[in-house]
Length: 112
Image 1 (cartoon, rainbow, N blue to C red):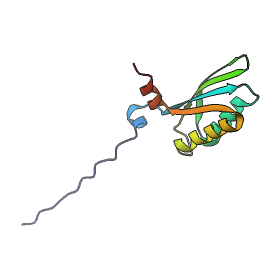
Image 2 (tube, helix red, strand yellow; image 1 turned 90 degrees about the vertical axis):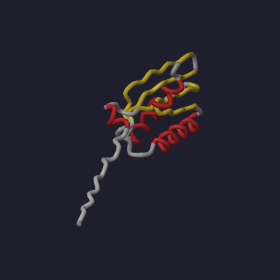
Image 3 (cartoon, one colour; image 1 turned 45 degrees about the vertical axis):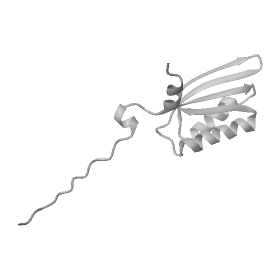
Image 4 (cartoon, rainbow, N blue to C red; image 1 turned 120 degrees about the vertical axis):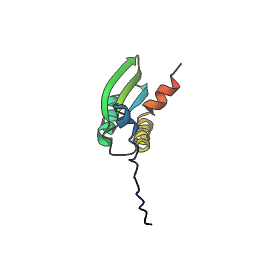
């Protein structure tokens, strides 16, 4: 008796953004003393890394600068960790605090 064995390969799981149809995003916050070129510096790092800015809000209160930026990550040409490190380094160079948080973490932290 001859039996045949067939192997059926299960397709690989799709990334979360493909399953849900949404694009992965990150939230960037920038705070510190207001100086010329803060937005240009942050948007420059985003452009170099392939992160697309989809929303931005900034305010200057007396001499203090505050910004929240939402970026889309799907076109990035580097890892998220490298992207966040580059922004943090920019902040150190300019005397700012720049924090980059993946949208999933941000949403989890702010869920009631």
